[in-house]
Image (cartoon, rainbow, N blue to C red; front, side, top):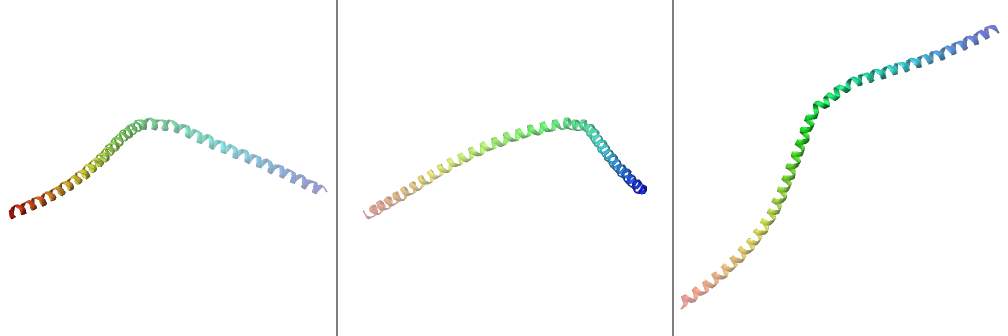
Length: 128
């Protein structure tokens, strides 16, 4: 019986030791994660001034590009206005051309009528 009790006691001590070992491993793991987190935070804090400097360095270029974009938008707006004006003018020219073509056709008809009259009169004069 003593052997059985000793074995039970030994198992109990072993289980407690394993539980303590597991807790110690968990603590070490937490410490490792915390150390990694702190290291990453320090690295990022060192990076912030570099990024701020990069932003300051790029700011004039950003301003230049924004100004260029405004200029290009103005040019596009002007070109669109010119195009609209040209389209309107083209429409007016087409209407004028169409009116002139109608007038030309009308004049050609009148010329043909006059030619016929002149021909008839010439024939009349020749007969006389």
